[in-house]
Length: 334
Ligand code: FAD
Image (cartoon, rainbow, N blue to C red; front, side, top):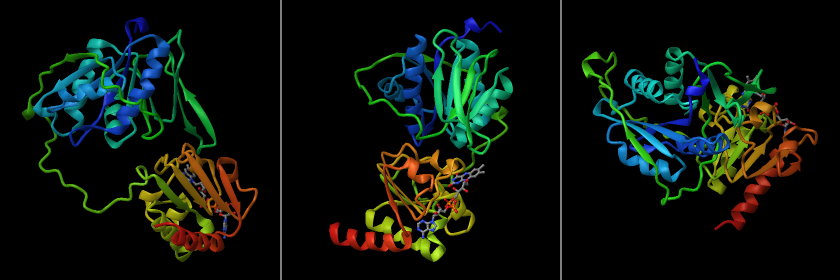
């Protein structure tokens, strides 16, 4: 493999309900930085049915070139046709870096591509950088239970691939005046040859707590003492119009379900305000909330690691402080 043949930073563009998924816009932001550093182009690979108009959005968010595979066969995500299209694009245009969101779709597609192309894949990356001269992608992620950050390199093969967690990278502010090149691609795929068919799409009716989209997250830990004590977290969240987050130990204790877990094996959140109440601040929790704009911690142990990660810290008993906070906020808030 001649590494010099491979140029350009690419992002696989995920489309959800007819819109570009937020994680893809975030990756264009990160990809722009990598492409500028490397002095190369930023490309987006857009696969779907009726998706071509979305290219304008991708240019506004930083892409120089968009490769479009627009065909009814791509109406719903399926591994096989999407993989075939993306492989086709890689073979034709040879990117040096290919990034995917670490979403169910991104993870599925990235691992399928990695089985076919002779290259590696770094999963769940949280920091991206590139060496300007060699073009080596520096993909960092928590390793060994989150105790260290490992930087993973793919020295001999291209493209260098990584999945990146949603909400970790920052999208650029869109510039509607930005334009770029659209390259329309086609690949011969026949529905009757596809091994999977989408018969029906059933939307989830259970309302999931979207803690990753909330402006305020009130998160509680084992320090709340019991499921009853954890009710105070719900009450404080209600007063503030916030979403409820939790540490893994709370989820494992059955006080709340896994959708609320913040951290390495849960959700990554970046709200305007994050309350960490009765949470010790283990590294596996910190990696999921450290980019919040304002972090307020309440813990009765003055040496709890959470106090190293917060902007404001209150040392004291949460079971006493939280009811006072709720009372005061009810008086103050309209
Ligand atoms: P504890 O560690 O028990 O801490 C409770 C805290 O509450 C203490 O600091 C204590 O001082 C304080 N406290 C006690 N009583 C009070 C009171 N009355 N008022 C105020 N403070 C009080 N954890 C996550 O959260 N998210 C993850 O995604 C995650 N992934 C993991 C992945 C791996 C591979 C591993 C090994 C671990 C993972 N963990 C994760 C677990 C993590 O290491 C910690 O065990 C967990 O975060 C601790 O939860 P906690 O802070 O609620 O509980």
